[in-house]
Image (cartoon, rainbow, N blue to C red):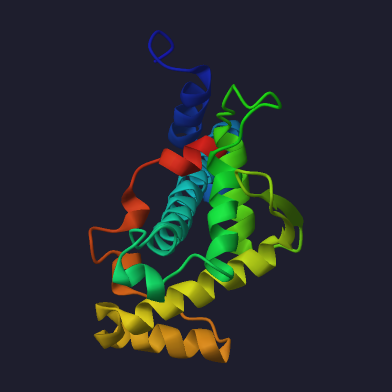
Length: 219
């Protein structure tokens, strides 16, 4: 045993064989005293594995949230082609104009000389998380021609996104879906709804299973 195994195991085996103090004293608690260090080490590894699983699960949850948010924004902004009949009923004014400026702010930032693009993936994830939560922090939005400058909070932007997306649902094919009608009713009443849309929860394979993409960017 000494040649192949740890001395702790030898002491434990000897205790089980010899049973010092008699069989009445050879309890599980007395036996565990000889391997306490090993038990604590095993417990530590177990907790580390659990923490790792929670971290990965958190990343997947973030993936689903941010992807659904991006899906909403892209369905709202620049939807109709200019000059078409659809552009008359879905013009980019009001709420939709704010969302368009916000997307420019998040994805089209440039250096002060306007020549070098800024590619900061951490900033993108941070901005999207703030929008998803609807924090009170304000952000400066500017049109590409710099003729329009607006200061708006993430909470207001989130409200703009929800209103525009509900308007899109009410006028599209999704309005015939029972889940989406329930989602719209919950949004108007201000109550939470666990799975707002069938395609948001996994009807298309589950957006949350997209891998460690956006969650890894923020890690």
